[in-house]
Amino acid sequence: MDEVISVFRSKTLRLHTTRSWDFLGLTLSSSSSTSTAGTPLQLAYGEDIIVGIFDTGIWPESDSFREEPRMRPIPSTWKGRCVKGEMFEPAKACNRKLIGARYYLRGFEEEYGPLNTSGNPEYRSARDFLGHGTHTASTAVGSIVKNNASFFGLAQGTARGGAPRARLAVYKVCWGKDYDGKCSEADILAGFDDALHDRVHVISASFGSKPPLLPLFVSEAAIGSFHAMQLGVTVVFSAGNEGPDPSQVTNVAPWGICVAASSVDRMFPTRITLDNKLSVMGESFIITPIKGKLADATTYFVNGVCRPENWIQSKFAVGRVILCFSSIGPYEIDEAEAAAKKANASALIFVEAMTRQVAVDIIPSVHVNLEQGTKIKHYLAQSPTIVADGSMKASDPLDFGAGHIDPIKAMDPGLVYDMKTSDYILFLCNIGYTEDQISQIVLCPSGTDTSCPQVLQSNVNLNYPSITFSNLQSTVTIKRSVRNVGKNKNVIYFCTISEPDGVEVVIWPRVLIFSWFKVESTYFVTLKPKKESQGRYDFGEIVWSDGLHKGFQTPHNEYNQQFKRSVTGPIRIHIDRKNQKEHPLAQLVFATWNCGPIGEAR
Image (cartoon, rainbow, N blue to C red):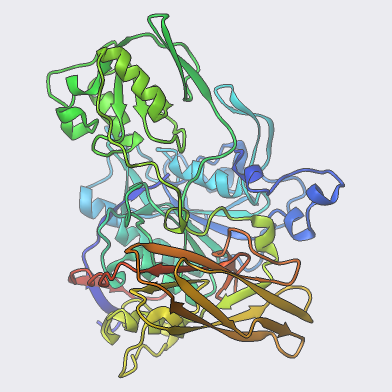
């Protein structure tokens, strides 16, 4: 068949899941002061940007999706639909805010059989049952809900998305199965086709597969986002919930933006009192007192590992509060909560080295740090206990990536690193992909040249806002190019360098001069080892500054519409001096991809 260029088995992916925007500096303040008034671009609050959310659907009655006052008509460029379905009437559900809603079931039903809307209370429509899609949509583009938003009285205040005046288009590609989100790749690819036809500007996708990663040409996320990149649509993926061990990020294609969760400057303190003798402080969303007998995880789970599959059957923890250490396993909070729920526990005390995030609980749960958890353990056992150590170390760029985004700086990045389709094709060639495999990734009607050069190169010259070099043994020179997109076209940028330990860094030229007639410039980075390797990763950075635009911890912002990545921050240098070999390509699998007309109505 001419319209089919490859075939691969559809896999099932898992879901990943408001003070956040204020914490990042994107405030709603009406103050006239320079620091808080905001630029015109900031004060537009994403007006008329169309954001497509790939998730579990939407609860349209939420205040987060009502029309903002004086909202303009739907942009004429919009080609999407609001599809009727179970408990979802387009005339009532959609408006100038929620301008589109579609749902995709074929892949899910091929895998799990017909959707059961009685025994498994889902909706055969874009309506959200699990709540995950409603949550992510409101976080991204939710309208302003003033003063009366809270979680059962906690964190009361104004709730809103990062772009409250943006338009929302919903693509329900994930479905509730046994109260867990299941996302069929076949449905996701259909959603990408429609979203690109509908003319969304940004796609947000909070799902992924478990490591290890498969080749990019059999990844729906990689294929769909590559098509989006070719059409100038930004795709933002979640990093996943598999950490904190290395190599656990689930969406790694360089043409998408991958974001991870972080802590914020807010706490939800909860006091734990044991027999009115010992009191420790943790964090939780518990709003009513809970009483129960404290129990160690070893009583109910094999080796004390709080995972559902480790539950010792017939041992129920009714009336018990189970103490679980994340370092024994290790495992994450969602696994421990599911395990405690399976054992019929009343509540959970979850101990981790550093409380990173308080989750909305499926069972009452309190997060405590290692020190507090050890106190509870000692009190319970009245004897010393061994707690796995080594998890606390200083963070490095491998831990925090590009750092927290600064939305204000991202609106005016100054310099950007251009990336074109041909750059990504060369990247794929250099990691060993064949022309046939690359052809399975690119958008079919584009006529893109997918041929590879006869002599393959290293990817160190990929024009990315970071530099990573493996096994540095001799002097190397690396090339980078930048474009000035700042308001000031006649500008000079100066460079400062923070060298990795044991590596001499030379930049040429040290000054970049831009004008109306010269908007692009190239510089070269020479890395020279000065001493014998200590068998570790070393880090440095290069900061280009014109006095206004300079190094902030956000080197991976997207400059939309023109396939560019900004440099609102330092370009990082990662030197692997461990003499490690590159990872081999993942085992190839038989795969499929339907390349029919984009945006075929469903």
